[in-house]
Length: 204
Image 1 (tube, rainbow, N blue to C red):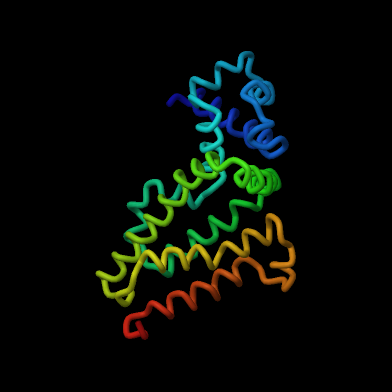
Image 2: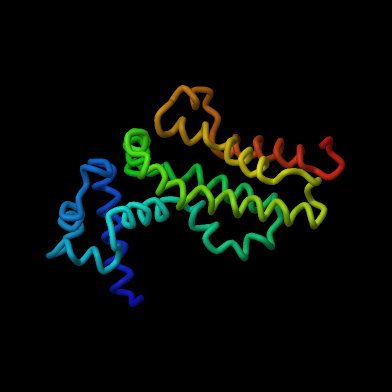
């Protein structure tokens, strides 16, 4: 892509984030997104994104460092868990620090309950990629003797499960953050417990 093309794509994604966050998936239209992006014609969006669903998925990916990091994970595979896991955790928790991103998640949670097809599209884009990376990475750590043998399907879920309450505390349930625990403190403690449980010589 040329620099101009990249900038136009970023412009559309920024406008789409604001529109989806304000109006939800159903309320935001290609026409309203084009207007917010300052485009002369809504059809210009289709040069970059073939459908509104594709645009929505691109917005989610743009807002999630965790999804981006696991899209091309080659470099991550060479790093130890003490480096990789905090990196992924900070990316995941930081993805909802932006007010528009938090509002988007709030609206999407409600819409996905009403529209299973949208929930399926989001799940198929993000969840298999992230869990697939974690399973592969954890299996590599087992081979290298850093982790004891275990079912990596479970450990991948558990790793994400440690972070979900903190994300939900930012998005919808402030009581989950009422204890004042910061992201870095939670990450440090959670990963220390996680790595301790998987250390070689631990109890299977």
